[in-house]
Structures are given as structure tokens and as C-alpha cells.
Amino acid sequence: MRAFDLILGAFGLLSAVEGSNVKRRDSSVQLWPSRGQNNVNIDTNLVLTFSSAPTIGKNGTIRVYNSASGEQVDLLDLSIPVSPSPFGNGSTKANYTDTTTYQTNIIGGMDFYFFPIIVRGNTARIYLHNNQLDYGQTYYVTMDPGVLNLASGPFEGFSSACAWTFSTKAKGPAAGTDQVVVASDGSADFNTVQGALDWAPINPSSWTTILVMDGDYEELVYFQYKTKVLVRGQSQNGTRLGYPNNSAFNPPNRQGPSRRPAFSFKGVADVQLSSFSITNYYRGQAEALLTDGMRIVIDNMRLNGSGDAMTTYGTAYVRDTTLYGDGDTILGYGSVFWENCTISTGAAMSWTRTVQGIHGNVFVNSTILGRDGNNTFVRLQSNVGGVLPWWPYSEVVMINTRTQGIAPIGWGPIQGAPYPDQHLHLWEYNTMDLGGKPVDYSQRLNISQQLTLPANASVISAYTDPAYVLGGWTPVVFS
Image (cartoon, rainbow, N blue to C red; front, side, top):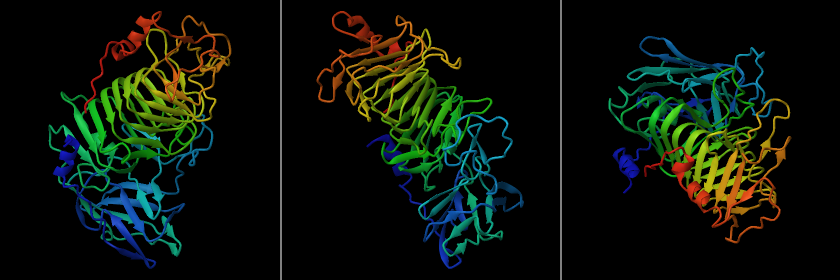
């Protein structure tokens, strides 16, 4: 039995009871946490499930109070707009003259625009601001009429201090704990992945393991400056993280990293993600995952993004992973060794921006699928408008790669001034179709190179070694 199954067994695979029917305009609503519930995690969402689909109002407030002190600990005001582009279809450029206040949550120490309520089917999930609840406290919730609406009229909400109350756990994981479990139904240590990551120590002496049970986790995830963190899902297809986000919904800040991924981290070291899926539900510049750190392992993952579906900085080892994107599917600033992976792309597979002195994207025994039937491995853009550097040291190397839907030219388009091809590494060895038949190299871009044996034996051997590509690091994958 796997260690993950043993841990879940310790929790008894508990299924939380979401009860407490409350009549509002002749409609039954189920609450989570239920009225008077004890032992609630401090990262809980507030969930209302109706007999029919609710809609979100444009005004009104949701407030959470400490029952003992009467202090208001959180406020969600629906009159505040969600984002400059709430549907993710507006401008992708930062507008620093915009002084509008938008719905903002501090996630992992950085501000993001976010949805205070998300409705899926008959369920409305309310997202409190992060880290507002404490252990060992009792809270009550008020909600104005019309925050949610039903076909019969506005949901009447809650106005008294006793209509919807709950109490949090007496304390969190004990000091020295190095393994916790996340379950969306509240039956484990945390309800959310972000809650567990916020708890994880910054610089522990040993690894911290976060086990995530199967379920849907619709949340923006971001953390920074942490080390030795392993996040493992119960199953790749059953443990599903995701969020609607892109560069229009969360445009660039004056300072700080990109805010457009569904899941991202910055300045970390020794982090492993295994056996779950991440989906960005918006199109455009919309990463499923952004990695920024040293010695990152991505193992047995399913990543679904759009443009720049995965962005990389630092060093990473990716194995047995499927990445789906719409174009520039890999935006690569870092050194990444891809092994036994599948990349499905709707345009150029990669825009690799590696600089002199480091390696780029290296694919070994992997598969690249072009969905439009005429896609390419990379694109490169010169500094035509004085905005971007030329990236003359870009490196993409493919060894024993199976392909489908790739144009005969293979590499490109190359835009603007000619590249100094002595610096570019656009190399491939033994590229095949899905049936294992060698592809025709005769129309390949003239600044790409097709490696052969025995002439390039030492190069091929070097690039099949992760340590060579990753600056001397030999990845170790925790199973």
C-alpha cells in the first residue's frame, strides 16, 4: 500500500456532513460549515448549495464576526468590481493610471484580483480573504439579501448572530509535523492547497509533504521563498486544481512576479509537484504553472494552460507529464530536462529565452503533438521594436522525440534580423512520427541542426544526462 493511502486511512477517508437546511423564499439551502459545526479548518470556504442554480448579485456584503468579541474579521463587498477584465477578455497590458479598487486577496504574500464568489451548478462557494480566521474561535456569518439570487427572488441571507455559526479547530498541526493532508470536504488538516502551503515552514531541516485528496480545488495558488516542499495528489486525474486567470484578469504589477498563472511559485528551492492536474480556465496569456526556483521536480502531472501554458525560471526536471497549451506553450527562461513527457500545442511549442551560460529546454524520449497539423517546435523573435532582446543563445534540444502535426520546416518562425546561428542550439536527434518512423529532415530550417551518429555521439550522450543540462544537479524524485 502506498504511503498516501496509509495516511488517508488514518483519516478514515472522512466525508464531511454538509447539513443544516435553512428556508429562504421556500428554497432549501445546505450550508458548509453547517450551523454550529465544530472543528472547522481555518482555511475553510463558505459553501451554499441550493435546489437550483443561484446567480451572484451586484451589491451587498458578506461579513464574518468573532462571536466572543463581536469583532468583524472579514468583509466581502460585492459592489467592488472583480477585475479590470472579469471575464479575462480585456487588455493584457498594465494600466498604472487606473486607480479603481478591485477585489484583492493576499495570496502567499502577493496581491491578486480574485472572485469573492464562484457559482458552479447549484453551489455558490464564498472565498474569504486568506488567513483571517484563527484556531479555537467561534464565528458567525451575515449576508445581505440579494448577494445571491434564485429564480424565485433574492436569497434572504443571514442577519442575526445565530443564523450561521461555526467553530474552528482548537489548534493546527503540532510543532515538528512534516506531513499534512488537504481535503476539500474539510475532513483533514486543511481544506485548501494554499492553506497547507501557507502553513509549511520556510526553511525546514527535512522535507514537508502535503498530500492532497481527490477533489476539485478552485483556488489561485502562490508561494515564495520556501524549501523542501513536496505536494502530492491522490491521483493525476482525480486531484484537480484550477482557476480562471490570465494577464487580462490579473494584469502586471509595477513590482513583483507574474500574476496570471493558476499555480505559481517564486524564489524556492527543492520543490516537487506530483500526481495531480492544474488547469487555467481562461484563454490568452494564461499559465497553468509557473516555476521559479532551483531543483524543481514536476512528476506525473497534467497541466492545461493557454498561451505560455508553462513558464520556467531556474532549473527543473519534468517527467511523465502532459502539458497542453495554445501556443508558446513553454515560455522558457530556465534550464529544464523533459523526460517521457507529452506536449500538445496549438502553435509553436516553445519560445525559449535562455541566456548565455545555461542550457535551455531538452526533451528526451518525449512526444510533441501539433494540433493544427502545421505547428513548429519553437519560434524566435528579434528585437524589432526595441522591447525584447534577441535571445541569440536560445537552446532547444530533442532526442528520440515522437511527433505529429509538425510542419516540415520543424523550427521557426524566426522573425526579424538573422540570428548568429553559431550560438543557437536548435538540435534534434532521431525525431520520429508516432509510429517510430524517422521524419523527413529535408525541409528543416537552415539554422537548425540534425544530430547523427557517430559524428555527434558525445553531444547526444551529454544531453541525455540531466546533470549536464541542469548545472550539475542530479534529480531525485520522491515516489
